[in-house]
Length: 177
Image (spheres, rainbow, N blue to C red):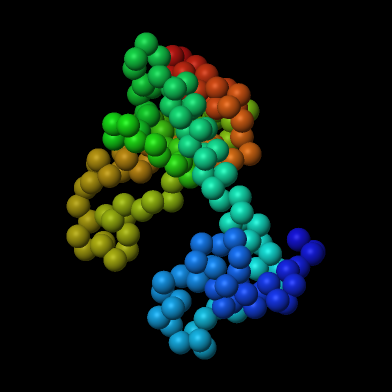
C-alpha cells in the first residue's frame, strides 16, 4: 500500500483513460457531469481501487464457487437444510453474504462458534420498528421472523472449498441436534 501510482496513472484514472479498466474507468454518469464535480483521487486511493478492481472478477468467481459448494453441502438426499434460501432454477448467484434462517439465531450462532465458525446477523430493519412508522406500528410477525431469524454464514474469497464443507457439516450437526 505504501507504493502509490504514478501521477500519470492517477491523471489517466481521473480522465477515464486508464488502460485495463472498462471504458478507461469512465462511467456513463461521469460523462454527464461537469469536470469540477469529478472525484479526484489520491495516489493511495487510486492504488487501492485498482488493486480491488483487478481482483473483482476472480473474487466474484470464487464467491460463486464457494456458494455452490455450500449449497451442495447443505443438500442431503435431495433435500436442502431447512434454513437455506430458495433460488430461482438454474441461477448462479454471487454471494456477498449467505443467509440462513433459523428459529433461534443467537443459539444457532453459539453452535456455529463451537464449531469454530464466525457468523453475523442482519442489520435490516423492519418498518414497524422504525421511529418514523411508530404511529402505524402494527404487528408484523412474518417480518420479525424473517429478520430476527436470519444468520449470515461466512462466504468470502479467502475461504476454501474445504471451509465450505466444514460450514455445511456444522449446520447439519446443529439441525440434527
